[in-house]
Image (cartoon, rainbow, N blue to C red; front, side, top):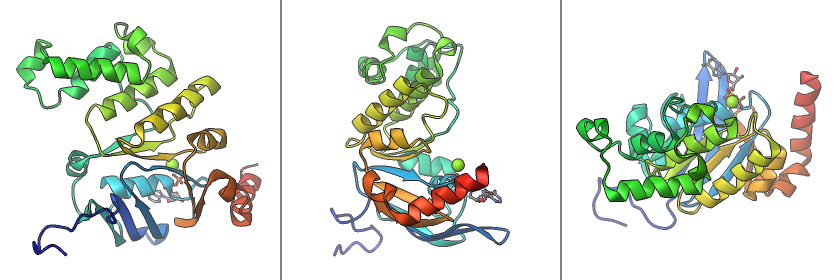
Length: 261
Ligand code: ADP
Ligand code: MG
């Protein structure tokens, strides 16, 4: 044990991100109910669950948008509960929302320059001055997401999938340790969906990546452990094959499909 009482103890057994018995009540309705989840550095994790399972609320609790009614959220051994969203983001937890939020009138390169240079002065930004390291980083990110051939056209003209990848690159530009990605392949073509799975697999390792999705083919393609949420609780965890053959999962999904039909 460390003798420094104020510093959290960090060793290889400390999860990077941990939710401990988290519950969230919205006026008496429990959107999350005793949720436990733990991620190690570099993990890639898929979270699935029928509509209303609590998936988005679960991300809201990590990013500080929603405060847990009970339980605690730890990042690198420190509680995040009560911190404002921008502080949590700055600690290294980045979130990709469902709809892309890129500057349509700027090129992918310019979008990325702005994301990379959050720490540059407004004066430098105004005159488009970036140091060589930042320019290299922008080029590298363009290549990682396959947008280098489109670097100089307006982002507004990109396909929906390309805009999603640009936004993922803008998130990565800020060097977060954790990437939270909510339904990245909704509305994408099959080919774009496959490329998105490959991209997220590539980003894991250097980052901890948590992906929420409905698309089962995509989840299978991620080749990552799957956590199934149901009624705000972890129903089961395992490989895609394991969870798909779990009778509880089948029942939950068949139940929700019958309702939706
Ligand atoms: P998912 O993303 O898995 O579809 P959500 O986390 O969005 O589920 O929602 C879980 C449950 O909590 C749903 O029943 C939803 O209606 C409810 N809920 C979510 N946000 C609020 C809120 N701000 N106020 C009241 N109920 C909410
Ligand atoms: Mg949702």
